[in-house]
Image 1 (cartoon, protein in one colour):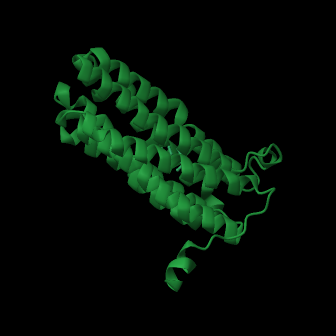
Image 2 (cartoon, rainbow, N blue to C red):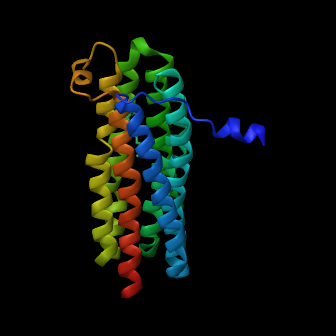
Image 3 (cartoon, rainbow, N blue to C red):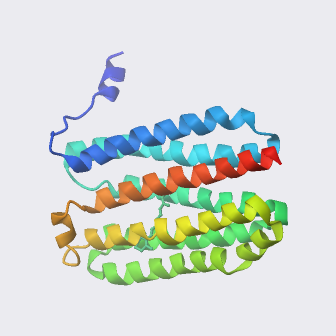
Length: 241
Ligand SMILES: *C/C=C(C)/C=C/C=C(C)/C=C/C1=C(C)CCCC1(C)C
């Protein structure tokens, strides 16, 4: 019993710790979204259940990491870079799986999914190196990461994925378009956070209350929950057709 209490013990949070606050709210939002996706799963037929399950897994994995990140921040007042990137390396490939799942109706092949996953892993591993391992060359790692991000954006906006979405048409095409906007605009929040967090670049942003972690936390809430809701909406429409 004792060990359980120890595990549930929560570090003290200062009342003016707005960064800690965004970790806390982020954690709750991810939990609520997971409950929503998991509980709605059974109202869809088999074809769509996997997509909704993956939406729930994305927010659930994030909820668990936010639980740890919130505590790490409260105890150390330091960015939880390690937990952050473990979260991303699990959830971003799952978002690539979502693209594949909705395009399957138009005959998407697994190779498309693996290609997106491959570039997402490059994007995140190089980002991690720039943030945690080789700080002096943050610009170089950020650049490589940005190129991988560009390939993903290109593939879904103009490449193979786009052709498949057009072949599928209807609600699949419009959901694909919305997800494309998430990747182009929503994901662009992350390089901004990276720049805000690199010493000597945009330190001024911190003065505006835009600390790197706050930017990442906003990005996660928009992208993980928003992405899932687009899929939920698509499944609801398809079910009605
Ligand atoms: C749920 C988490 C998501 C959707 C995370 C996405 C992360 C990115 C798109 C990160 C991109 C980065 C760059 C494009 C350059 C600088 C380094 C990164 C890793 C922050």
